[in-house]
Length: 573
Image (cartoon, rainbow, N blue to C red; front, side):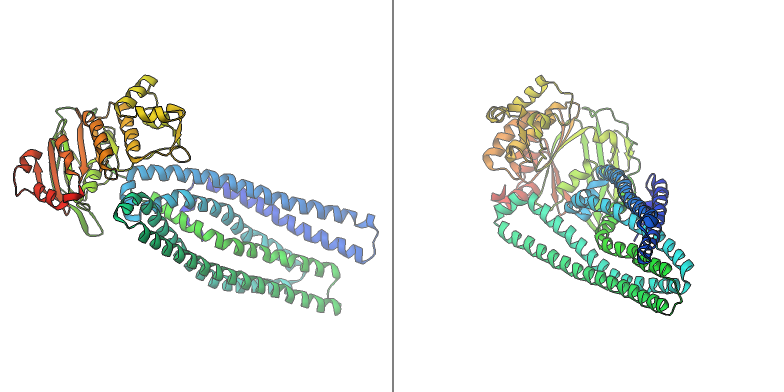
């Protein structure tokens, strides 16, 4: 139930010591509460004056308030720890995703990453807050009570001691069934997130292909499967809770019956018998509380396992091996026999590329040919399985080099627009840009008309919860970001106009053309009209380079792979 890796958290030992001390005081308060309550009731039963039992009543009130105060303090104490721990995990996860994110997301899916960083870490927080308190309550409080019951009547203490593991065994049996169901539920939840996020990202394409309705039916079926799994889990959880309540109530009833017989036979005084009867429910209460919250912590444990698994992945070695101030006209990059794949399936095979200076290189091929994967290798987002890489004559194991990644700007198919002003979005990567620089970037990126249409100009809130931008406008915002940072001489484009209509793409093309000059450009696309802006082309098919060279030279050859590809794409360009 407790992941051993939890003890690697900074400050966990100190936190647990504080929790043990507070739980011990809480256990003593429960004992005092039960003892003084029994004495007050016996005093009333024997007809003592109110002044005679006043001390017992006040002592009971003090013990009761102390118990409640300790519960509040423990919850606040663990809440602060959980907040710190989760924020630490969040920072570490973000750093890990930045470092190895594309390779992780390629295997687990975008939805899983979103779930882990969002709902997953929220579940981890609940796990820390609930589990540790309940575990220490269960580990300390019942045994303090049991020691006192043994002192009063060893027979009753022995019965409670023997029945405790029997109740736990039944709880474990049903708890394992619930955990199995919860694991399936969590897996379905991650699957649903992956499908949903992928559907959102590909919605324009799905609509163009007329598949949006059928895909919505698939999302509905997955949601129904998740609902059914959740209900099955709840049924098992409710059954286990009922079984635990039944056995604990039955055990307390047995104790009460035997105490009644001892009182009738004169073998036991009223005060110790009443004290045992009052403390018996308290003896089982930590177990019942643990049972109530056990099922609530299962998702937290699953989420924590995912978090720890990601953080436990090996870091990228030799990230700072490359020494490169800036890509220049005489800089060279060479890839030789580079391969990349996963699960015994090669996605890229025997990639050989030699690049020098400010070339504009088109990477073309049909969908699934490996364009984005090659771009991710070049951008240092993925680490090749085998092959040789040289940059300015320096041998490198991969391009996940900090100095290389400082050189480039990456534009995906759908640039992310933050919930911020248009000005804040444009200068997101260049926070010290002046208003003059921003205005120049707006003009060069073709955003002048958009700014004039916005109610507050550059200070209008856009993105989530604000003014929504079209695909072409989002691409222009991305271009403006690029223009503000003139130190990056390498530009990576991954199908930047794939979801735009022809007119918007044409307008954007006119804007982008002058920006591409004096840069090393990698432009992945299946729209071959971009070749007139390129001075080199790489043709991919099934993960292999089948042809590369000057665009016009290849187009002049009727049997070239580029012409074959152009014929295959036909009207789909």
